[in-house]
Length: 281
Image 1 (spheres, rainbow, N blue to C red):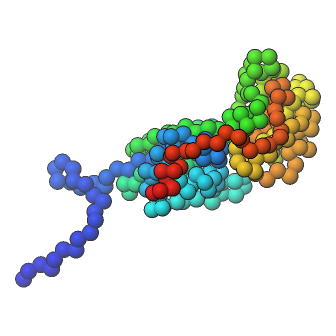
Image 2 (cartoon, rainbow, N blue to C red; image 1 turned 120 degrees about the vertical axis):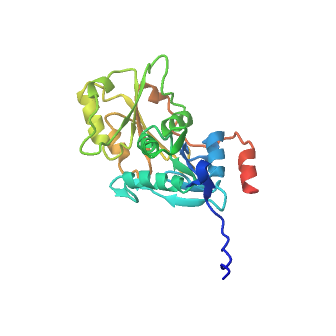
Image 3 (cartoon, one colour; image 1 turned 180 degrees about the horizontal axis):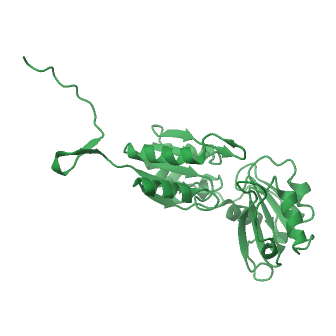
């Protein structure tokens, strides 16, 4: 009796030595999407987005950047906000590994930079533990965009000889920071995720010796069309932060006095061949 014809389908397996078969390995790219303006993407980030089979993105990645992906690219939203997670971090780690083990090119697209309060180190460790190749593509962090946009340098020879990046909340309880060190003058302190604890941060810095009159700049939605800047002082930080809903940075230091809080459309207009190419695909 003749055998029925075999059904033909596209296989994701490759043949290795000794006649054994194994699934072709995939790869994970931890990609920094920057603060939101697609013009601030690196070329490497753009190329990774265009080559992705699947993009696992957080809620801070702008639609303009997501739309640079090919139409066939699958998107998975794993947005996280304070006290509201689409997926817990452990599940995101497992998702990245599982997708890569299916043989896919995975882009984990993260707002800002993957290694600056982006939990990229945890995702990299999970990939390494599973034997998945993982590459990291740095991105422009929000503080750099906020500083540049406002014309307020993070370091300045006359008023800021150091800059420190801290987080405004901890996994459990209040942020545990070296307040005495942060209270020293002539330095810039950048607080990520600090809007809800702005009053506490101002209180702790003041109690540790930082002058209440120290200039402070709040930048909401840095680099985006709805960016907002508020110039205040350390004493006025809590009141100035009230009502902010978008992602915002607290920037404290003498150099913040140089900030220009007036927002205006840039008169620098250039064509971007990367985006022109992507729109034709």
